[in-house]
Image (tube, rainbow, N blue to C red; front, top):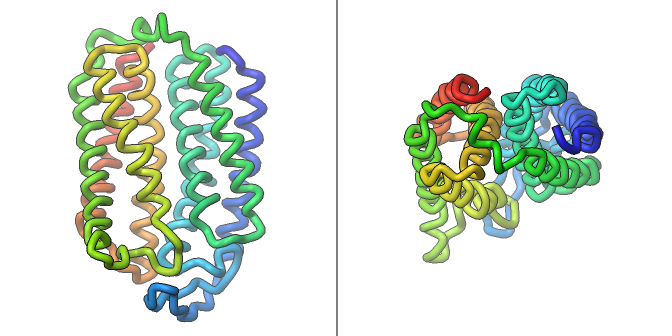
Length: 284
């Protein structure tokens, strides 16, 4: 694997820092002390009141703690294993590692810009930067001229591209539906005391276009389409597991969650696992 030593150093730093901030988020968020706060939009928001996330809302903290748990107990060990196997010239491990780095990039970009300022801000920023450059190194470690040879002729192009198109369109409709009332001057649901919709902006600006462009490239049987679709499948599994756990924790905390979001995210989580089995089956 090209640039392995550099990538190894970057990923090790990501694993150490992400485990550190995840543990801090989980352990300092016990025994919440909720209180009400009136936002500039006149919305009354329930603030968590305890730990690193003390100035954030109950809804967002429920999501953050779930994300921290998925990162600590799933993403960190899975990435460590993929990092080790990728040095053994395992193509599947290289794809998995790249997708997991994409998960860290998305997660800590959102942490950097979403959370109210807390003492871990500099670590979130470092993780965002490390993940960005690790992702660049991981992507450029593949030889595009030969990558299609690593995929079987039976690789389910229509199934995978259809999945990417479906999740991109549904995600766009979900968030645009949330934004639609604001065109008439209404405050977007879920804004609470935050200044803007970070996750929706990231999804509409990065994830939706990436899914549609990748589907097009895959249908055209372009080498980059094979690579990006594999990376998005892996990143999607990690992210969708995190989102599913966020939904569960929000419901436990008494936060209202729409049934459309529940069905959509849990359904795509299960289907993403199926697509990953296909990825393992039809690559070598």
